[in-house]
Figure 1 (cartoon, rainbow, N blue to C red):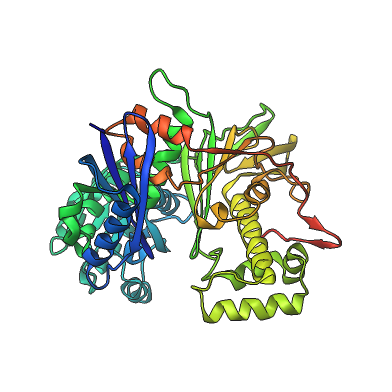
Figure 2: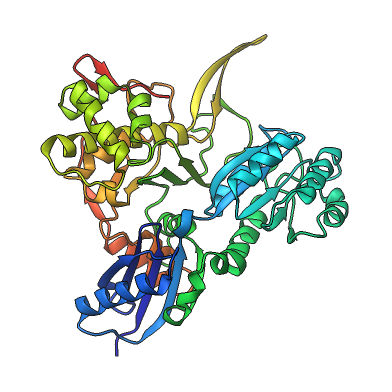
Length: 477
């Protein structure tokens, strides 16, 4: 009898299913239906299951039925910290690492205007941080008091100054409060994993119910995590491997979507040269960045603005006026799929530009600083120049006629000589959209999940080319 698993992704648009043969490490079949979260999630789930059953000619008995979700806008989070570059940044990293969609970041003492803005953002969770352990407590207590007096109804996770935890608990006694370890217990020391774990647990315990996903509970065993966290776990599995089975080494995953372009990296990112000094907060080994202005559909006009409309049109091989007209059409119907040759050409230019920009923002940079003892080269962010592998996932890359050319935009480029982008990694395509599924499966069947992921990646051959096209050059934000 086939030992099978069902891996479910409740997406914002579609509910996607993958049926896996765990023994043979292969995909038995796929199914898809609309994500009917706002009405009755069972309708979309049933449609997806029927689609899967048609492909398989019948459903096996599943040993595991695990789900992830980014439906209904994903896990909407607001973070509140003290100093923007320190505890506020640490809170932001914890939120993104937990798979959240960060809709607002606030620092220093909140104002009533800030509170009004937070209420307008309608977060699912607020992460409150501030102060090292034993350090400043006045600001975090003032912020807790304002949050308590607000109309906010969502859970609050407190991950700030340990010495203020009892007072914060008293102030927020009328709210759902979860206290965890400080995201920055000492100056410049990150401790974001406990906050990540708590955020994911709140997602499982409360948000799944709030979004109505548990109404389809008869068809799955558990929603384990937000979909971006499942993709991140899949990236970690591919990078590290499991006992007795090697992974790919250091990895970057690029996922351009309709609303955002996400980039994940699994690498320590420390300076490759002993002559370079790292500055700023220590970088997490497993890092996710989300570029909300680089969505292929909802933010196509912004991509064009950032890249430069003339350069974008030149890369697509169409006239700039024609490019503007197509972008205007897209703005009125973000759900439209490219049909004509010009549509497809512009769509490909957009995804190449989105990947170029998103990876530039994710990677670190070098800078020369002049000191009393002479010039010093400093590194901001992660050095990913020696990265082993870059993996593309998501529809915009998978459906591309030349995915290698898209992923090539993640590589080192002579127009950005100080960017620490990957120089010569292998390029891979997650053509079957299995990273989320392998991430879900990793805890229960790590060896099967790794072999499945490695066995279904497609190696791409691509020679990096400059972003220059004629006299046009795509700008970096």
